[in-house]
Image 1 (cartoon, rainbow, N blue to C red):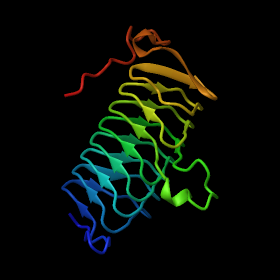
Image 2 (cartoon, rainbow, N blue to C red):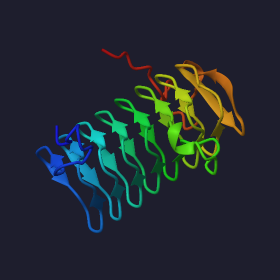
Image 3 (cartoon, helix red, strand yellow):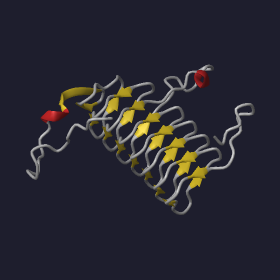
Length: 190
C-alpha cells in the first residue's frame, strides 16, 4: 500500500502496465490504479482512490478522494463521483452522471456522515442521472437517463423518473431498433 496508516499521508501514485492519461488530467497522491487504465482530457482523480483493471474515465470527469472503483468500469465524460462512493466491477456510468454523498451539506456534522452511493456489479446509470447519498443500485440494474434516484434499486430492474420508480424487470426490455430481442443480458457474477 502507498498510504502510511499512522500519518494518513499518501505516497506515490501507483499505476500498473498499459495506461493512457490524456492532457491536463491530474491524479493525486496515494492512488492505486490497475492495468489498462485510460482517461480523457481534464480528468481529476483525488487522493487515496483504488481503481481496478480496465477502467476508462471520460473527459472532464471528477473522482473525489477515497473512491473505490472495480475492474472493467466505464465512467463517461463530465461524471462526478464524490468521496466514499463504491463502483463495483463492470458498472457503466453515462455522461454527466452525478453521485451525491451528503444529505445536508451545510450541517455542522456533514463531514462525519459522508457516504456516496454503491453501484453494484454490471449496473448501468444513464446520462444525466443523479444518485442521492447512500443509495444502493443492485446488480444488473438500469437507471434511465435523467432519473433522480432517492431509494435503493433492486437487482435486475429498470427505474426511471424523478423520483426514479421501477417500471419493469431488465429481462423485459425490448430493443427498439429490432437488431436484437434482448438488449441487456443479465450477467452472472463469479
